Image 1 (cartoon, helix red, strand yellow):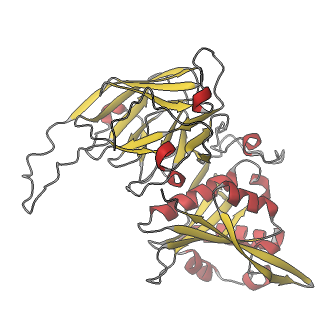
Image 2: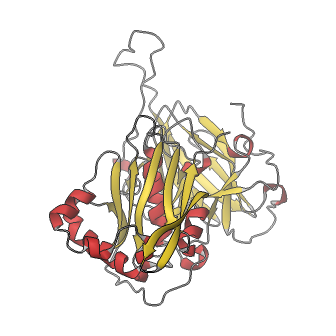
Image 3: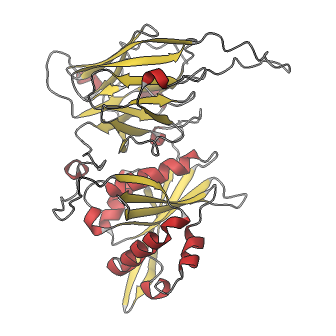
Length: 411
């Protein structure tokens, strides 16, 4: 890659954007990327040993002695431009824009409603710690390791400001992004500071976008107005409840069956199965159904202990089909709709699918008349590739089914 002029990147105008899902940062959601940090003094930074270039290994007491460097990272909106300054490595950058880059100005104080990223990087030599010194909300876009990176693999995590972030070596990122104004962070990272970059504007002819107005409430659910859904007044969570996503286990069998049967009754045309077929299943049969494996899992969304949403994600096992992952059985309870729950579940499923090495596309099917679901999938990057007429029959009524696919973009 060339040496970047980070303060004058000369981004072309009018580029399309790839919208990242914005997810509340939790330890379970950050699994694979890193973890939350309560005390920066108690968070060690991983250092990767210098690789051997021949057949003989590097001596075990050498190759990782450069240690770490640390300083203050400042994230500062000036008008439409977000600047980053990292004292630890003497770096100064344009991190993001609030509007089309050629139109961006720094002579006003209007708060940004979104951020547009043109660049990201990872450090092969070590991990990195960011800890907020001003205790304000901030955002960090991340993607899992792999030089076959694409814009669609990025997820934007939102942090409340009371905890920091540690990311492992090899994790794609681009600093820390304050929601508005100026914010300071303690930064600690590998002193070698090797950097591997991706230039979205020139490699993929796009920018990454995250809506800063998509404020997550204290339950971790995105503001429905931002997502374009109707507000639902009947969704009222008690203050003791906590919304979180995690893989389902056999201990969740009863909750899974309850929500599954609710979905089959409330939205029968959305499923190939029927309530009549599944109502008599035993808990042992349900446990076998949801039993996960390395490449098949159900993800559940909980408010407290109540399961309010779920989605299945798996990988085809045939030798000629292992480049394909699939999403199945997605359902969100009516009281949880309109708050970004579906988007978070779908983002979690895609994140899991893309984490499997060699996956190139993710497939799903959806009833053509389910317009809300079709909009959700298209907004996440799925495209329609086929239509099965009269795929489902309920009484005298037939329902068409759409086949959709989400593919890895190629430069």
